[in-house]
Image (cartoon, rainbow, N blue to C red; front, side, top):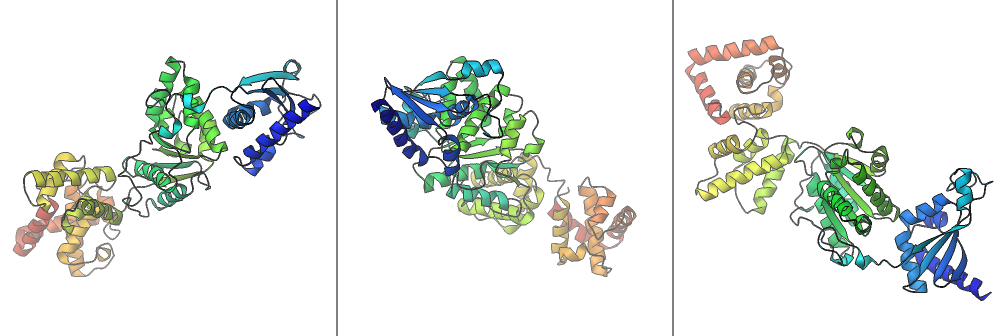
Length: 479
C-alpha cells in the first residue's frame, strides 16, 4: 500500500509541474493516459499505451520528464516505461496507437525500457564555443545594427516585416511558427531575422535566442558525428527559445543534417518555442529538401520579400545617410535608386563607396562622382540605366509629369519629349523596340523607329533641339 501511494503521489506532483509547462491539449493527449505503476530503488515505472506513445514522449518531452522526476525523486532518479499493447486495440479507438507486427507486440508487451536521468543541461556541449557552458551563456550571434528601427518598410516587404514584428513581441505565441522569410539576394531577409532576435532579447531578456547560418549548422553537425557528440549537438539546439536558421535552402541534399534538424524542429515546435527560417526561395520551389521538412515549413507563415519600388529604394538610401550624418543631394540619391533597382545590398554598397571616395579625396558628392563609382564598383553599368530613369530625366528636363509621357496624348511638347525618351531608350538599353514603345504610351516598334529618325534629323537641323539632346546626354551619362 505504501509503495502504491508513493508512485501515485510522485507522479501526481510531477503532473502539476508538467501541466504548467505544456499546452492543455498536449497535456490531455500525452500525459493524462500515462499510469504510474511502480516506484522502487529510485526507479519510477510509467505505463504507456503503445510503443509509438513511448517514442513520442522520448522525442518531444524527455527533457521535461527528466527535470520534474529528478526534482521529485532526486539526482539518481531513473525512468522506466512499461509498454502495453492490446491486440484488440485499433487506431480508431486510440489515435496514438500504431499497428505493429505480431512478433513486435509480443516482445514489447509489458517489457520495461529503462532511461537513466543523469545527464544535466550544464554538461551539454556547446558547438559554438567549448563544452560545459551553461545554456544561459549561449551567444545569440545577432548583428546589433539589424533592427526594426532601421528597416525600411514598403509594399515589397510589408507582410514579412509585420509578421516578424509580431513574432518578436510574442515568440512562439503567434500563428507564425515557423516564420519563413524568402526572397532574392539583398532584399532584407537576414536583416529581419536579426531584428526578430534583437526584439526578443529586448522584450524577454531571459529567453535564449540563437541565430545561425544553415552552413554553420551543417558543419557543426558533421563535426559532432566525427567527435561522437551528436546527442550533445541536438540537445544543445533543443535548449533554444528562439532558433533562427538563415539560408535554410543550404540543407538541400544533406539527408543526415535534415534528419537532425527535423528532430530539433519537432521538439521546439511542440514545446511552443519560436522557429525563424530564411531562404532564397519558397518551400514549394526548394529542391533536395525532404517532404516532411517542407510540410513543416508550411505550418506557420511563408512571407516573401520582393524587389523594392522606387520610393522604397529612395527611402532606404535616405535612412542610410541620415544614420551616418551625411548630406547628399536628391539628384544623386535618385540616380542611385533608378540605376540599381533589384538589390538593396548592392545599392547600399554603391552609396558607401561614393561616401568613402568623397571623404578620402575630400571631394563633394556630385552626380558625376556617383556615376563614376557606380560604373566602377557595381555590376549594373551606368551606361545602361533603367527605362524609368530615362523617363524621369526627360520629364524633369521638360517639366512634364511622367504619366503624361506614357499617355496617348498628341500634344506637340509631349510628343517631342516622348520621341526623345524613345531615342535614348534605344541607345542606352537592351530593350526591344516593341518594349520601348509599350512603355511610351503603348506605341509599336514602327513608331519607335520613326521617333529615332525624327530625333536624328532634328538634331542636325535644329540648334536648340541639339542643345536639348546634349544636356540630356550629360545627365544620362551616355558618353
